[in-house]
Image (tube, rainbow, N blue to C red; front, side):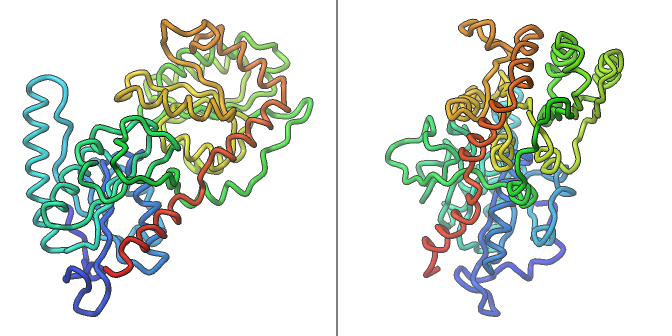
Length: 395
């Protein structure tokens, strides 16, 4: 196993208590992407604030997000195990299965050395070996499902989980015999702090701030569609726009040139820093619909045009988006969909019409902002921490 922490002093050596009398730790485990890691870190922070020892188990991809983990959690022991998705072609299935098996034996060794109080899995294939090793060692397993459709990694271990926390009131694929609790999706502290900022007022000739969030891949479709849609807006409306857009490196030059030709102020970058503050300042977002993105958008309480990634596993992003759209906190536009009306498909023409109708109607945007924040479950991490304390009060 690689990535051993510099110190394991915070981790107990006994199943219930360490040699100093401290209760054994909670281990949170998640695949190495922000969508899985950030909610796990948010719960870890809530547990640490309540005086509990915590450790993180992830895969090697998690290193890319280590710089974004701040505060008390930055010093939390982190363990990295092997994991990969056993899907795709035959080679990927075989190598993925081998990787998961290696991860299982690494996680078994970790269970013996750390002897955790419980393992809380947040999905992603790195969580599978950890959860299975925990059950093999007699350690209770808790799951959190971020999406409106149960993820495949969580489905693999759901039957053996003591409790499943969900982010949405209804979660497709969740078996009725599983004990579950709707809590929402934990979000990081900056987004909770931004939740206190009121929706920015819109004046008749004032700036309209548009934030475009493309997810980890930068969403090339936004670079393809948005400049053309903006070009179709009335000139007076164009000149009020200030666009902040997450853009792939290879798309930045052409996208910037398109905005420059329209004399539109646009800040383009593959990575948007201070995302919580950017959301707080925005009047409208255009975004992908991963669970973490939507939980952050709704925590801050901003309206959004929702464009699900069409190749997401089990089409879970569209299910996420539909839940928020049904609550009137955003507007669903699919990237492709033969069964949809033309106005619901993310094309240059349809987006131009949608932007004009929304940006010309401040009252509608304000109402959606209220609905967005009402949809949020901003106390998800604290609620999970309280439930864990209740479940393991005698541990």
